[in-house]
Image (cartoon, rainbow, N blue to C red; front, side, top):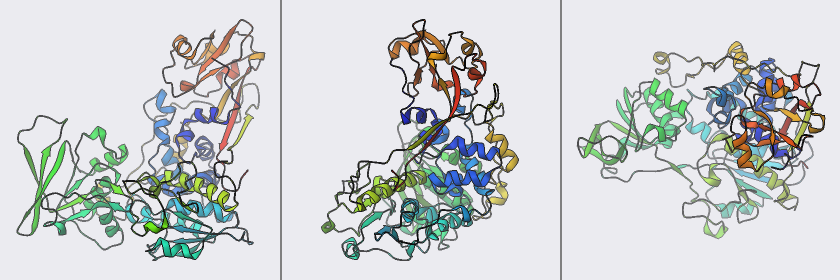
Length: 582
């Protein structure tokens, strides 16, 4: 193999697995260290720069960072990254004076945002700093989009949502709430320099089965039902309620139904629980609230008698146990359908010229987020279908870059590069500027409100979050994957001291070969090909140093033991570029 080019900005970025997995590339180890130092406001601002909504995401993020966490490779459980994000949000104090100041002099360009969700708000945050005039249109009474209308208050309190949405709106966004855009053709007459569409995926899928029309009063589309509960239009559900679907919306529906009168609530899925799209913790929370999940059942018919829904018939789906009968009847008073969401753009006329695919999604460039109509950009669920909040934030950042370039008449494909630094961490021979001891603590459990109490109040937040003490303990579990082992071949005397001291046997001095042979030749074969091998220049003996990045603990013992300082621990900082940066 060729020597590793550690000057490639993406090399060490890929080693910081949590940050790399985050769509917004939040510097996770950096803010976790700040939490351990009780610098909560500093940790919050590190988050706010990249993910914009630390308090919201500390509660409802899909947590793509956690499956990637290196801690989960050396023991059972990853660091509770999402809940630590909430720790800094809950303890930050008043940070309004730390928010960036908006230029009083505008740049003469006007941007329209249609939809007030996380993607649009992120675009606003980034472009306001550059002097753009931002007008936001939304048919709801407040900002937040589907976070506000669909995420139940027992998961995300209104106070937290309002606080973080208003940080952005109060930066100078001109808001037009309770305003539904019914004609894109007419809207374009307003002559904005660019338009961003972040209207989400607002149409829930239906099930057109026998009995659907007759039982319509008792059968609801899940996302619409959740919104009706959130806004107080629906205050009660059936005594026995069925939820059809296995995603996070289904989990929100079933848990909300328990809180508005559903004494018996069941979830029905076509496959097995191991194939559900819902996050594992959402499934666990539903089960803990006495909500059974019935597997391998395919909806066949709504059963309606004398104008009332009495239940549903299901067929056995493939993959389940051998059936006793062809149909399974499950009695119920009400059904909530959470079987998927779709884009919906009835307000965009054909004359506008935007190209849509067969699924109703707009033709959007995956790099620039520009549609085939140059001045119109899309992001969030409106661009590529239902995903999650952190992905919408990432879309907003990228779209803001593109819209700024577009308004300047520059090439949208020439993106600004990320900002990276590599700084030494040495304080003494065995002392570092970071806490390098690997904690032996297991993942901390989050305190919860008792089930008996929380089920009675749909507005009561179920998770209490980590207090400062638990947060400190959990923060110490982070193994500082942004503190990199940097090797200098010219200083190495091949004494193998680093090999002897390495707790995971990830350092090897061997003959160079092609990658497949090299991976197989290591003391412990490197089978995770998603992680690179760190290969040095040729050493005096003709060997090379090869380190398996996959299992390195970043403990610094190699650098402490090395008699010639051929090993060093250096902090790698990776920050994605924002709109207006070069």
